[in-house]
Image (tube, rainbow, N blue to C red):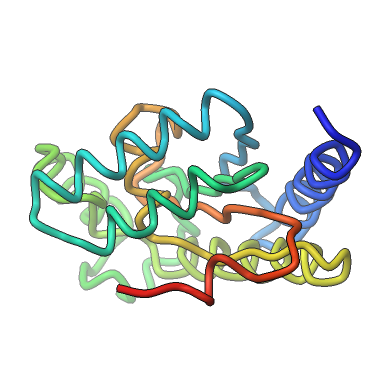
Length: 183
């Protein structure tokens, strides 16, 4: 491990703290947050590549290459059973219990994410993601929010209880591999 990699791992933990302390509706926490490094990054990249080949989605393969080159990856997901309990209808169902019942019926593993999901909890997830990448930016660590890394983590069973997850790979280098790319 190098000093640079140690620093990136510290930033990943600070990002996790930012995500966990970000404001959440009704003061309850629907999130699962994990930091991946080393061999776990390789495993995540392999799964992303596999999913890209199975579904014919080249951007999964492209993103897998970025994850492979990363120093760390922060995973943030929202637990599916977590609802705000407002019966607001934002999920497309009249009541939160109706949404949960539909979710249980449709959770067949066919889709990358399982839904419907509570829109309030999805907003909580978005705010946590934004808080985390703000922290990376403050510390000058290159990053990119990746749907593909979240799908890979869900597929690997790393985000227990989550229906939706995103990954934020991190790297400290002279060029930003997440934006200076092709494909």
